Length: 580
Ligand code: ADP
Image 1 (cartoon, protein in one colour):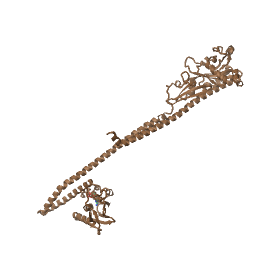
Image 2 (tube, rainbow, N blue to C red):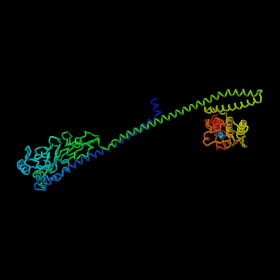
Image 3 (cartoon, rainbow, N blue to C red):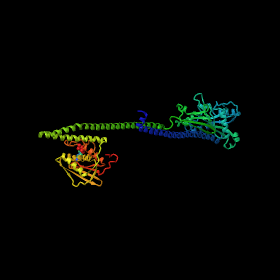
């Protein structure tokens, strides 16, 4: 089979394939787009939420520092003891996880160092020492730090002005009077292990809040800074722990680099760096600092079902396509098998008809000779018994002859070669001659003719119409074993005539009435004495049809049948299909 033939035979299956595949791909792309749009929206919301949480936390910390600042404004002097109690009361570790410490650095002149050291030592810290390079005129040593333990002890006494980033941030806080966030630093609290990026949030403390209107006022009245140092990873882990479905990197400033990295959620969550397909890059500004936040989705982002939806649609669609194509191919194969079988049975039927035609033809010739010899024999000098046998033989030969004639007619009808001899004749002639012929065969039966057959001159093949009528009369007698009378009626109705043959015989069931005009059809359950081959009605019907007429039947089983021939008086034999 070449491509052309495949296409010709299987185009419905190909059509199913192309339509369903196109529909599947279309649905796949639509669902992919919709899913992508939903995921993007969800991602945007997650990023906004994470950023919001981060900002709120920093605002919370600023508020804590404002509380610390207020402590100074509320009392004449704040002692280490006050500080410890105040901070302990904040319960930072429970409420504000991620804060490394809350501390206070005093703003002092270089020449005040010995006095400050002495004062702190006296207050219960004999080892206190200000750690500084003493390059600046002013120092900002950390004098209160809570919780006062562990890493935080390393920061106690450290002069933050001796380090440039801290000094710059504190200077900014001092001059503006507002919270100031430092750039990335390494906290002095860091040991050699688990070093994390850090940053600090400062709030200046002035002599009194009323004396801070101008920058000059603020510079004159600054007494120190409350501040909180943060270890980047500890802080962000506390804030962002509920965002495990997104990967977050926070950079100090606006240029992401290894150096400016404040936080990378991968190191916290101990999962491999999985950059998803969704990425967002935003900057936030807090307390004078700019942070760049780069977020990307992880494999855990979004619902799994939703992620798989397009693939499911694709797989399902292709599976249905495959199934439908298989069904279509099967149907086509079945159909072509049925067509082939039909063709084959038609061919067998044709061959059978051809065989019947040839066989009947071949039988006819020897039968004619036999008949001639027997007739000669009949004329010779025979004894009475011999003559009886010869007559019986002639009767049987006549039967055989008519059987062969029927077979030949069937094959002629099949081949479309049954020719009519058109002439004019009287309806009364047709009917009376037919009665005569049948009476000849069935001498013991009576054919009752309704009187007054109209004197209609008809046109058609009288011989063939008589053959049809003979057959109806023969059947009427043959299928009425219990009755000896058959009725025949001829009528003219406008331009038509009807010939009605009525018997009081076995009748025909409704199902059989629809089938008896078919070739070789006989009603089931007929008595074996009622011989026949089911050709008579088929031939009769074809003859009448060739005269543009029809034969109808009404019957009731057990009561009898009425066969009616209905033909135009002058059929139009020139009409297509009715040529003589
Ligand atoms: P055949 O008589 O040789 O069987 P026909 O074609 O003449 O063939 O008739 C077909 C079938 O119609 C018969 O076998 C019979 O069953 C039924 N039939 C025809 N005429 C009559 C009738 N007058 N009464 C009952 N059955 C009939």
